[in-house]
Length: 211
Image (cartoon, rainbow, N blue to C red; front, side, top):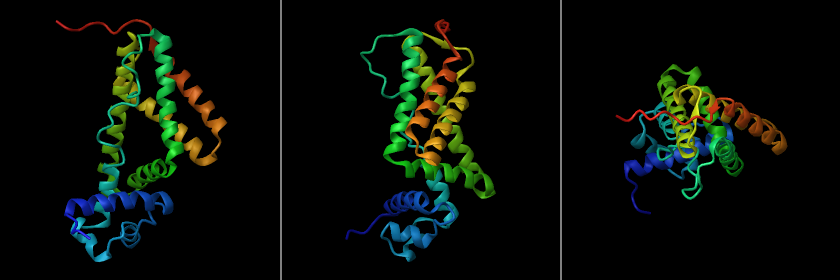
């Protein structure tokens, strides 16, 4: 087997930790268990991370993919602007895209939720947890801006204000599915969340502020 670089070890351990957390929770993500999942000797752990806390901070940092900038990435370039009808369709589709990912890999989102709660209760991980939240809100804000621009509409609040609400809605969808596994109930939450977000939508286009 080729010798792994430090960066490769870090990536392998982060990936393994995410899977272990999904299966055993954060408390169960011991360095021994993570190394076993990564098929790596325990002695090699400290070549990649100085501590378990450093590993968890890295897992939190990578919980939200760096290349993800919008939940509306599936908006089609050839779809004509549709006003509020188009906005409603894209908001609902953004929630549905997230739900599809949840069904495909529930463990990953379960691990992310577990990490968020764990970081809240452990001061050494507060900063990592807050950075994850801020990145999620930035993605949500960009999603709403993208949708409004696509369909020639605007929002009654700034997208910075609405971003946390969109994340709150995705959290509700996630927790409903993870705790019940009930597809019909989760789809009801998606429909209600879409109506809630649409209550902030305006048919008026965003004013042009260009000089």
